Length: 212
Image (cartoon, rainbow, N blue to C red; front, side, top):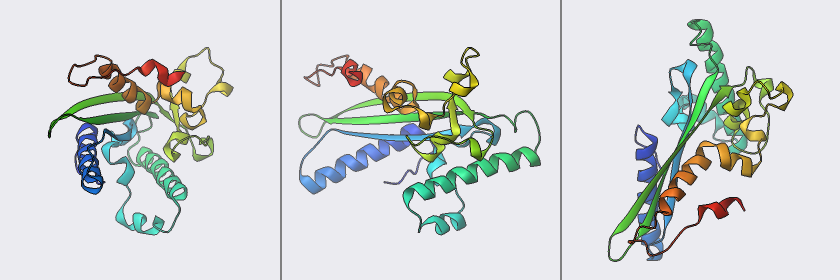
């Protein structure tokens, strides 16, 4: 599903409704659906790539990586982004362009079918702050997308944590990532709203069971 809008919220909503309608068209059933849009924003690149994280590469590079498997293609995007940071810092040297600060954002949109053609909509959002590793050789981990390997969450800024215990987002376990990542926070934000037990829904959710 395409992501034609300029905000994570709008793209998540668009993907949710497109998916909802397509499932209804193919199966004749109106089912619950959740869609997400997320991305990485880097301070030194003037908040780039942000909402276009998945498609920021020039068309010429996109054509070259079409033959690669998804993981290799993802690694190319990571390597190019690291190169952008280094080049931008050299072309426009300043404390701002050499900053490693970054953050991930996530927006989730959930659609719950009600009676007739009515639907109930819920949204969640989450952010995790952190920094980008200094060089490609510092990218580590296998649990997540390639950008996760270059992103160190700000929880490791704590001076009491020895540097050798610092981990990238891709080095965290799935449960740890659910607790601190942008997607985990976005999901929990959505689940908290579900616990309000709106009478339109007629059922209850228990997000605390997510981590049992």
